[in-house]
Image 1 (tube, rainbow, N blue to C red):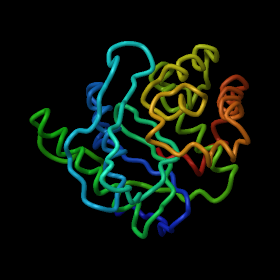
Image 2 (image 1 turned 135 degrees about the vertical axis):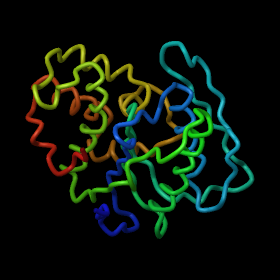
Image 3 (image 1 turned 45 degrees about the horizontal axis):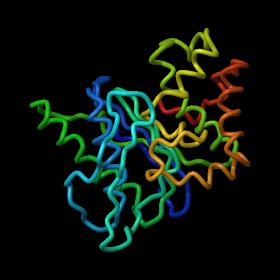
Image 4 (image 1 turned 60 degrees about the vertical axis):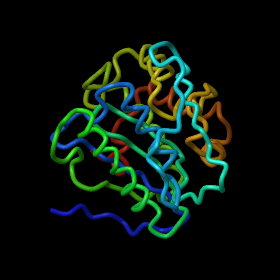
Length: 239
C-alpha cells in the first residue's frame, strides 16, 4: 500500500523518517555516517550541485567532537530547500525534523539524498533497494508535539544499549543520559552546547521553543530520569 503523506507546505515542520529495507543496515561504517551528513549539507540547495566530497574529517576514530568541517561554497549563496532543525542517524534508519523553505522542498531534498543509496551499492558491491519504500512524514501541529518529537528523535540511540527500553522502560537512567551525551550521529550534542555539526542545523527555532539551551537538555534528561510513559509519544513516533 502506498505511504500516505500530508501535503507538504512551506514554512511548516515535518518529522521525516527513512528505514532500511527489511531492517537492513544503511550505515555500515563511520565513514558512511559522515558521507550522509555531508549530503545533508551539500544537497540542501535548490540548484544542482556536484557530488564531489567537500568535507574534512578530524579525529574520526577518537572521542568527541568528530569535527566534520564542511567546506562552504563561496560562489553563491545556497538556495535552501529546507531548514534542518534536528536529525538522528541510526544504523538502519534516520530521522529528520525539517521545515520546508521552497515549494516541494522536502520532496526534492529527499530525492537528492536518495543518491546515498547509489553510493552504498557501489561501495559494497550490492544491488537492489536500500530503503523501505518512500520517506514517511508527520506534520507537526503544535509546540507540545514538537517537543515530543525532539525527545523521540534524540532518545532513539538508547535502543543500542537497552534494546527493549520502549516496552520495558529505561533501566539505567544515568547510563542512558551519559550515552546520549556521547552519541555523535545526532544533533543532540549541538543543542546541549557540545559543538559537533553546527553547520548542518538551525538551532535557534527549537531553542526558542524550549526557551533556552538548558531546557533542551533538561527536557530529555527529565524524560529519562522520571521514566515518562512512552505512550506520550504516540502520534509522533514513526515505527
